[in-house]
Length: 112
View 1 (cartoon, rainbow, N blue to C red):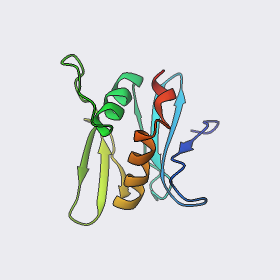
View 2: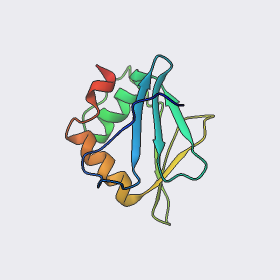
View 3: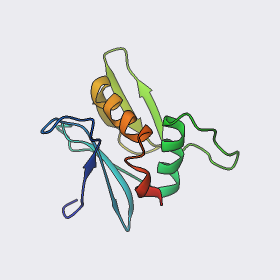
């Protein structure tokens, strides 16, 4: 997806591989720059908003069903996926940098 303006958490070091987020008219796109397959998960702004609320520990409204799931493996991997879509895979350190950025409000503008 060329032409997208990808953003990563400011807590991810310069030049480091990290979870990246971009927006387009088609939705919110999430990828891991170190993923050799180049997997890009595309979701709706509403589903991304629910993910952000969840990662911030905020209560979810009954009408907000989680469309994205986060699963952690025993091998230090973290996968972000939606039903029927390929998973974005990262490691715990990169995921933690993304979550800290989420909690700092760095990605809120994607759902405004």
